Length: 427
Picture (cartoon, helix red, strand yellow):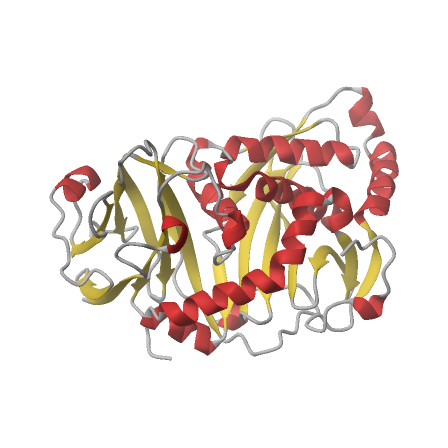
């Protein structure tokens, strides 16, 4: 759907009482005029503006109780139905974002808040600046430093899931909320268009290009080395959401392994703190680094969504989430394997996970309480005799950790899906 000239009544039913301000193609011209006047002196002096970019956290899922139950029980029949529903709901949205550039996005308004959306009748993607706050003073210039938090949200009405990834942009220049929302929307659109072969460094360049479009030619965007892994986890989620299969064609390799980690623990964050890979490549992680935090469980009321969002079914289950995707490197008669370490942030407690996708035999999966070197664990993994569904307990709290796998061999498109639930709770 091209939103160049579209009446308010065509907005999806799951957003209530919002109004269309205008297509991004028109709003960009207004931003250029605004910035030419507002930053005239800065531009004349060739003054550079630096923006630090981080992911606020790993993605957050907001879902119905039935969705929560499907993932916690590792019911792959239901999970794959939800993924197909999401595919159907979001195909138009993702195709617009990939192919139509600025014309895919429309500025909308509710309660004085302006943000960007792209939508179909049953699915939507949005870019919403939920806050801009002063966070300090630049020690060299004395200027106030501001942090803008921008969320990219994706919703499937049939799948009954919202996925949210949030980015913190820190700078001494105060910008209009909708400007920041557009810049992030356009950059994430570029990553989605590139698919799983992207590198995080590319995201910085796409942010620069989007800033130039709105008349901010002197802006640069930097992602620190420490922030790369978490940013990568959010961008991978932006590309595939909960399983948009038409975007899986990464590098035409033989096997793809998708690991989904759900943190249902209300007491503690969990850190994915390193990996080992054998004949595998990982999507989005520039240096093959895997080190990020999955925050603890919060209540649904603590999850910020844009004003006016009113989903078809109550979304009263929430968890922090991570998705990691590997594919085999050398594709000639070789499979792949990997192992990761997952631990508490303030203690040397946690668990190990390993996966083996061999060329000529069934997949294997292992998990064990306690921490080890990932390479050593992979090479000596205690492969579980029931790899499609098993559980362990971990840490001094004896937390349950449940694991699932959809197929031992012969999966469609050679895509294998593993699930880890940390401290799953009854619905």
